[in-house]
Length: 56
Length: 392
Image 1 (cartoon, each protein chain N blue to C red):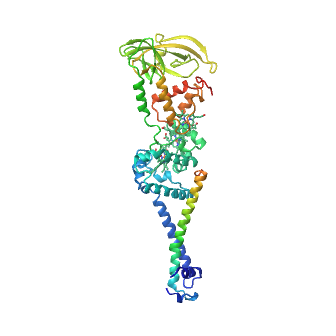
Image 2: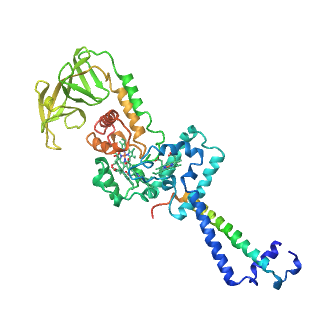
Image 3: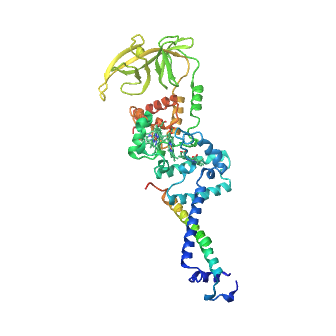
């Protein structure tokens, strides 16, 4: 895309759709997976420090 | 499109896409993501995934096939994740992260041979035991529930133990170690060791008038032809040889018995329940085989005891000159088989009359043949607080 058309009012429908797909299909899923993995990692580390999970 | 310009579009309100499209699109992306995520998670939660590593396929998977969780009357199959992966979501994710370490182990070949696996096995098993003990065997309880168990239908051994376990809501793995795989090498070779003991300790020539010790439980007879059974001699029990007749020995077994009942059980000494053996009903009442001497009353129970000498026949074999090697064997086997779940109690932690109850209560947990059981119990009694120098 060329930078000239890039004023607030000149965003094309194609650009906007691309941006939407980028976040909804790629960025957010990736971040979510990373977040869950990080969470699992933290819980694992906690378990190492405080012993395996007990009965609840 | 450069990143800054993309960022700008993302930050501004949309001009072409309606709120409805955005919401619907976001919603659908969420649904698709969640489905895919769980499918992925499930895929790593199947047995195929677990055994796709050769390490698991060749070792634990093969062993599982020998057990009740592979094939049973009900047709329910327990798979690896049923027992090994927590069902609660947080713990499951944590376990998956932990498994990344195992993938590392795979890449670097930490356990790529059976030998390396067996070396590592005790450590791996202890991790699992720790986990089960902390969550009270939660994974087992996804299928098994104390409240749904019909104790009356269980074997006698199971009834006693399982009722108690249910009362205390005890963790299954306290008692059911090795339920799905072979136990790590701790108890192996017990019966070979016994055969070895018998080979090295048994004497071949006998002298009349000398005392010998039985290595295992041995049958005793009324006649030199060894035709009429008179009962059984317990392990590690002294007998005095009176007469040698070919392959048969006439021996004297002395001890004490209670006068109440048929007096079949012979104990080593007055007031002690240390078994020397038992007589058949006929033999116990046969004055020609059994001669009685003085009688005493046991203050503890109020029962009367009688000192006796039983003269019986037995095969010339499986007798040792001393108890030394028998005790060595018993001590070693006691230490290796009774330290699996807890440190084994000192021999002199209990007195001679308390040990049988304690020991018999534990027998269902260990892999011991009858002779080893008899030898170990006798060993414990003879080294109990009644006989030990530093009393407990």
